[in-house]
Image 1 (cartoon, rainbow, N blue to C red):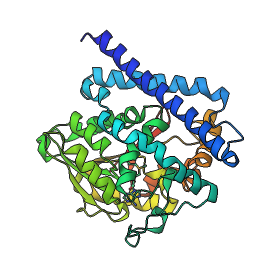
Image 2 (cartoon, helix red, strand yellow):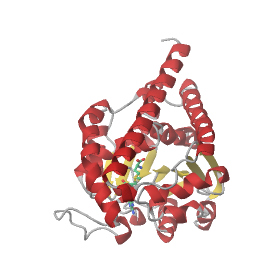
Image 3 (cartoon, protein in one colour):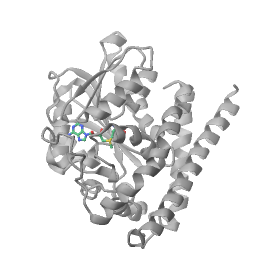
Image 4 (cartoon, rainbow, N blue to C red):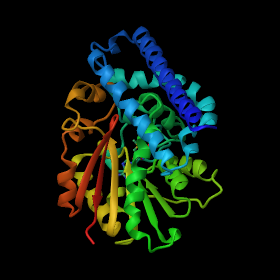
Length: 352
Ligand SMILES: C[S@@+](CC[C@H](N)C(=O)[O-])C[C@H]1O[C@@H](n2cnc3c(N)ncnc32)[C@H](O)[C@@H]1O
């Protein structure tokens, strides 16, 4: 396919996902307002004046995504990677799950778990129905619906935002060129269902990949996704990121995507310190998470509205947390930040 044609196909594919997500949001909120008028939003989640700004940021994100593929940072095929089978299998379940999530919203009870879930082995801050998810992160149903829900939330751009970690990751690896690719170790902290690991695998086929998460259900889902790839399976381990079960100075790169806004602020610091501990001198940490008020003052209202719509108990605190300061406190240096669409990136180096 010619470049122009593939670019057009990519843009059309993304636009299709965006329209679908928009229609989904409209339909589900209308239905919710009908069934539970008391849950009807008094203000618009995205104020009218923010819409062109968001559209502009989204266009820029997609352009950068396309450009990075063109430069060979990752194969163009990853731009079209979409879990279609999951979509057809689980999208109807998103609708079926809505009444239960509205019920929890109505009662303002967001620590509800099925009786068979053993809650004893998790920190209390984790036992939440984040984003109104049934069983929080602790069931197979939640793991099966998660990626679709995130895609619907971000208008189909979640993977494009995750991919923004790959260019800095590859730049960071340049200083380890004297090693063979297999000797390079990359860890994704809070890997969830494995989407980031899948993209890193596509961009760096030979490296040794590791993923860790607190949720056994999400790790099972991750294993299901990653084992479809004929290349070597990443090593997945269940662990609390506050106590990473790896040796000191072990990894060349540590990444973490969409974790930090779901943590109390003291836990954010402990996890940054753990990442520092397991990184080799000269290694890099790349964090991707939500934008914050300091980098996107023009989207303050969108940022403020987010935790009103979705159960995100630590998000408000995250939006004003100075992560650069936290990284410095952990002894990281040469810290760079970037913003793409609704995500912010922190790229920090462990001194040599
Ligand atoms: C919003 S999801 C992000 C998942 C994935 N990185 C992604 O890009 O979609 C947050 C993930 O963090 C995990 N998590 C939350 N607190 C954790 C902790 N203390 N240690 C390890 N994983 C944690 C959850 O189980 C969940 O999979």
